[in-house]
Amino acid sequence: MSGTTQGVTGPVGPVTSRVSEARVLVTPAIARAFCGGMIEHLVEGREIRHLVRALDARFPGIAARLEEGCAVAIDGVIHQNAWFEIVPPGGEVCFIPAIEGG
Image 1: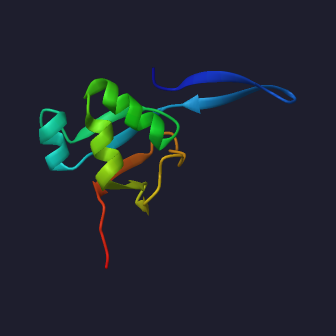
Image 2: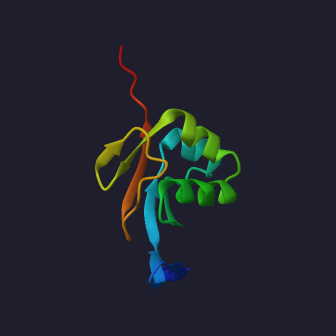
Image 3: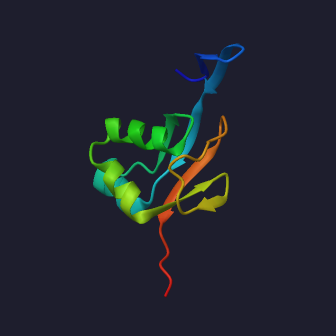
């Protein structure tokens, strides 16, 4: 349900937060292993962790792979620890192989 609103009661009354779809891209290797080769997905969620959970519901096992070896780019900005990062409505999220330095 793209653009649904979830109501929450705050200290001064109802607070709403929009949940919308993000364009999520995974690596070709992950796409082949979990998604039947499909690289691009529309996924509903407010934070990266929500997107990962939604992807795992569609493609069981993908969450562990995304969590263990990927960095995340949200609208072109790379995050190494992105689990709680907010995804803007209509944002683009790319899961990319983590780069290890030494």
